[in-house]
Image (cartoon, rainbow, N blue to C red; front, side):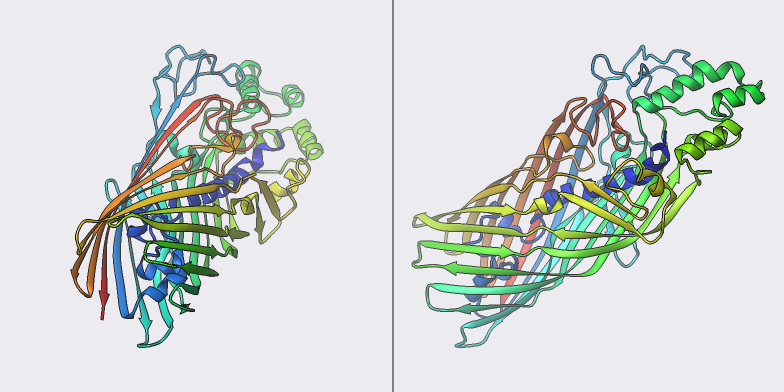
Amino acid sequence: MKSLALRPLVAALLCMGSSGSVFAQLGLNLSVDIRSLTMGNAVTADPPGISAIHFNPAGLTKLKGLQTDVQGIVANFDIQKEFSAPAGYNVFGYSDDPLVCNDSPDNPSGLCTDFKGPVRGDVEYASLYLPFLKKMVDFGEGIPVIAPAGGVSYNPPGSKLTYATAVYAPMVAGFGSNDGNPGNYMGQKVAIERITYLSPSIAYQINDELSIGASIGMSYQAVALKTDLRFPNEMIGMLRMVDEAICEPFRGNSNFFTDLLLFGICNTQEGMNPFSKQGGMEVAMEQTLSPSYNLGLLWEPNDDFGFGIVYQSGAKMRLKGKYFIDNGNSIRELMKGMNSSASGQILAAIMGFPGRVPATESGLMSMNLEYPAHIQAGIKYKILPKLQVNVDVGWTDFKAWEDFRFEFDRQITMLQIAKLLSNNVTDTTIALPLGFQSPWNWGIGLEYSATDRLKLRMGYEPRTSSIPDGKRNPMIPINNAQLFGMGMSYRWDEDTDVDLSVGFLRSRDNIPANTSDMANQTGVGNIILNPYAGMDIKTNTKVTIVGLNYRKRW
C-alpha cells in the first residue's frame, strides 16, 4: 500500500522515459532529406546536396558557387493497437475489466462471462509540441505532419572551402487520440522533436580525391506527454476484495470497534479497483539550445567508387519543464478513510503514509538527457554505367539511455515515502533503469540514370530496435522496423533540380501477456507501469512520407 500514492508520479516519468527513447528510433532521419529516404539513408559516400551537413559534411565540397535547397516533407502516422484477454486472464481473481469484458457494470460477479474480441486502441491524429505556445497541438484526424526544411551553401570561385547552413529536423514525431480510447493508458498524446535551426558548416577539398568537413548543429529539443493512468495488479485486487467482501456488511453501520479493527479503510465513498482509471498526468520538458557537431570524410578515387564516413556527436542536455498530475478519487478516499480511524492513523504513521493525497500535484522538473552519438560509414559503386549501388553501416549509442534521472525543485512527500522502498529514489529525485542497447543497422540504395535529366532511386533500411524484449510497450508501438523508399530526380535545367520521393516505414510487434514489465506483467511486483497487465498486445505501425525538393544553383 505504501507505493499506491506514488504510482501516478512514477508512472508519469516511466511513460516519459519510454516515449523519449522509442520515439528517437521512430522519427530518426525520417524528416531530414527526402532523397536520402529513397536510398535507405545509405548516402554517407554520396551526400545529398546541402543535407550533407547532416549525413556527411565533407560532401559539401561537391557544391559549387551559391546554391539553395528547399524541401517539404509530409508524413502520415497510421498506428494500430490491439488488446485482448488470453485464456485464464485475471487480476487477483477478477476478470471483469471493462476494457475487454462486455458484462454489465451491475453484474455482481467479478468474473467476466463475455469477453470482447481484440479491442482496438488506434492512434487517431497527429500531435506536436509547439515551443512558442508551450503545449501540444492536435492536427486533427486525417491531417498529416508537415516538416519544411531548407539550406544554403557557398563555394567562392577557385576556393577549396565551401560554407553552408540549413534548417532541418533530425527527429520529429507525434500522435494523439480522443478521450476514452483504450490505448490512452500508455500515452493519449506523445510528442518528441529535435529541430536544428542553425548549422554553420565548412568543408575543405584536400585534393581531387579527398575532402573533409565539419558542422555545428544548434538545436531545439522537446519531449511532451499526456496519458491516463491505471494500475491493475494483485495488491489493488486484494484491496477490492477487502472492500467488497469484508467492508460491505459495515456500510453505514460503522462504529468505533469496526473502525479500530479495520483501520478505517471501510469508511470510503469509493473502493479501489484494479481496472479503474486512477488519474492522469501531463509532462513537458524542453531545451532551447542543444549544440552538437558532425565530422565527415569523403574519398572518391575515381568516378565509379567512393567511400564516406561520418561521426555525429552526442548532445548532453538539461531539459526543464513542468508536470501536472490528477490523482484519482479512490486513492484519496483510501487515505482519507484510514486517517478517519485512530488505528488507521497509527498504521499510517508507522508505515509512513501521507496524511492526505491531494487531488492534483504540479511543479517544476528537470533531467539530464544525452542525445545519442552516431557513427556511419558507406560506399557507393557503379556496378553498371547507369546503375549505382550505395551500402551503409551505422551504430547508434542508445545505451546512453540505460537510465533516466528526474529531478524536482522541491521535496515531494511521495518521494520521501518511496525512498524507503528503492535505492533509485531520494527526496527530490527518481532514477529509472531502462536497460536500452546500442544496435548496428545497415541500409542499401540503388540509383539508375534513365536519361541525362532523369534519375530513379529506391532503397531499403531495416531498423533494429534498441529496446530489450522485456521492456516493449505500446506507447510508441515500434520494435524492429523496415524502411522502404523510392523516388525520382529531374534536372529541370542546368541549374535546377527537382526531387519527388515516397518513403514507407512499417513495424509490427506482438507482446504476449506477462512478457514486459513496462506493459502487461501481472503479479504484486508490477507496482508502477503495467496498465494492460495480463493482456496480449499487438501493434502495427505504418508511416508514409511524401516529399518534394527544389535545388537551385545561382
